[in-house]
Image (tube, rainbow, N blue to C red; front, top):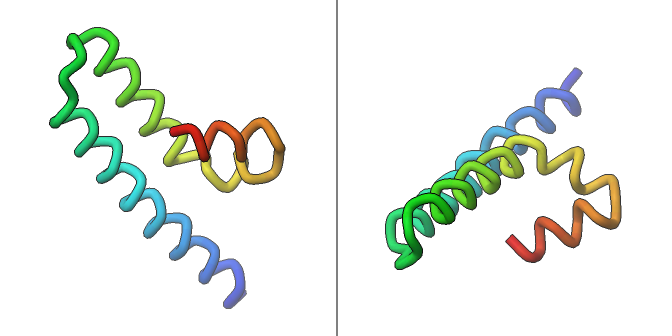
Length: 66
């Protein structure tokens, strides 16, 4: 039970960090709105699903590329 709780805490903490980074990139980007908004939503989705993405090579590559 303790290991599961630790995993959940790490997941939430990393989601907050990745979401803050995505939002910062969104706010300070010089791109037009449609591309900027799409990229921001994509990064938010990825920040929620990062543990699942870590289980595949394609997911790890996507996380590295942003």
